[in-house]
Image 1: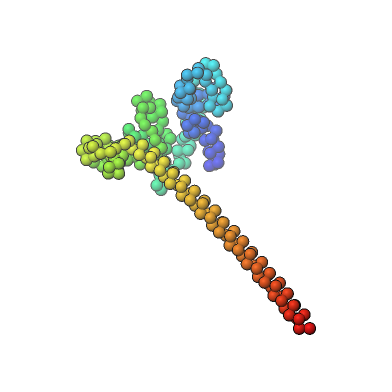
Image 2: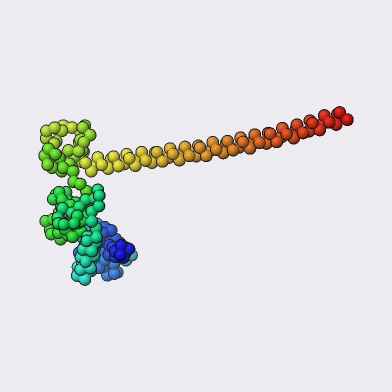
Length: 246
């Protein structure tokens, strides 16, 4: 059952956002995408007036009409309902704030609503014009300032902590601050650099250790040869003494 669901998920996923199709549309080459995804993709590359399928790269001289596929949309709705019914939130996972009864696993969190949603309850954020403007992120605990009850959108380098916009007017006024996303990217970059350096150092040490083992083996072989040569020389000395005593 799980394997069948996984195959269905892959078959009906948008190759741009890698999620289940939302407002699915099928372009002339036969590939399907979320309407918003293919629109954004084509609008970004609108300068040349040539529109390509992101998958097969077939080109269209004029922008193909994007008509919502009702049948495909119904299939998507059923597939989402099936997945939601079997996707209970486990320990440490974020649950949907709007599901009653069972704790259904959330797939997205809205920074404006400060709430998390499962596949079913997040749909209005894709369909309702006012909600489309909200910022959706991967399901997570949304950090909120305990003093002002606002999002922690700023990182204070002076105090090395995340703060909200209101904090900049009092406790952190005049401090060295940057957007929290920038600070997170900087830390991630430093972490990646550190991991790379550690990996390179480990590889160098491993090579050094291998060389030491080879040197030890080489010295051991040399020692064995010296012992064998000594035995030969000793045997010759004994032989010469015996001949001398005759």
